[in-house]
Length: 66
Image (cartoon, rainbow, N blue to C red):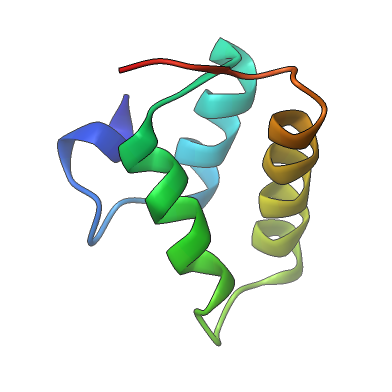
């Protein structure tokens, strides 16, 4: 997964889309997702994808893998 390889300059949208498509998220990606919430310069599309991943995680649609 993109977020696993390099979390700092990773492309936000493709990474979030990949998480949603795979229906899997790692603890490292979860921390990255939380850090995105504090980032001030997100586009509407990025915020929308973050919300989708958060809802999928909250509703149990994503498996947390190591």
